[in-house]
Length: 287
Image 1: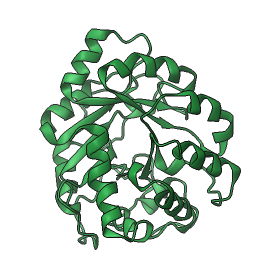
Image 2: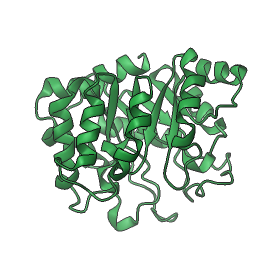
Image 3: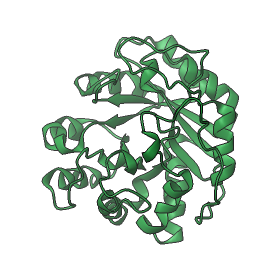
């Protein structure tokens, strides 16, 4: 991850993509030293990633709205998330970690703070996996929440029945998170397209650097999948920065402007980009 003695870049060359008013980052994290990591998760990054830092990212990239996602380091302790939402104000929504046992009073408190989603993370370090997805969904939907779901996309067919049975809307993270990039005709990706085709499943265009073998600026191996999703479901795509890119070695730390500009390749039409950056997240998160 980024060395503690070298601050993360919070500014740089201006993006080529001129964002429309209301542009939304639907996936980023906040970490502060005031909040300790919890057992079961990875340690928080040695260097903080604060609301003040993120406001500089917003200014750099031309973003107005944000969805703060609970970091795995904090597991089901949502204190840092709630604090960040309070600092960010009405331009922010949150995705928390809750369990089937989370009480109604706590869910009401989180809703009032701006939380609109629950995180399901079926990868190492995740707090709540796919084995509890139906129970969490049933618990949070009376509060107007949806789920965001992350797993190795190569395993999609093993999870297809559970995902198909899950009521929408919900979000599949990180372009399906194929930990080894696959071609668009791969059965697992075709399964994702089937799921998206039902009309109430969103996919987040985020973090191509985590899985791409080709690398930036276009991440062509992951970009093939992103372009196929843009063609199939432009009204159900979201964009996220995944800032502050925890766990990424310095030599692979992405350029945040590059991660925004890749939309010029994946969604070359300006009206499509407006849907992805503004209209779709506004509809899902209530902006």
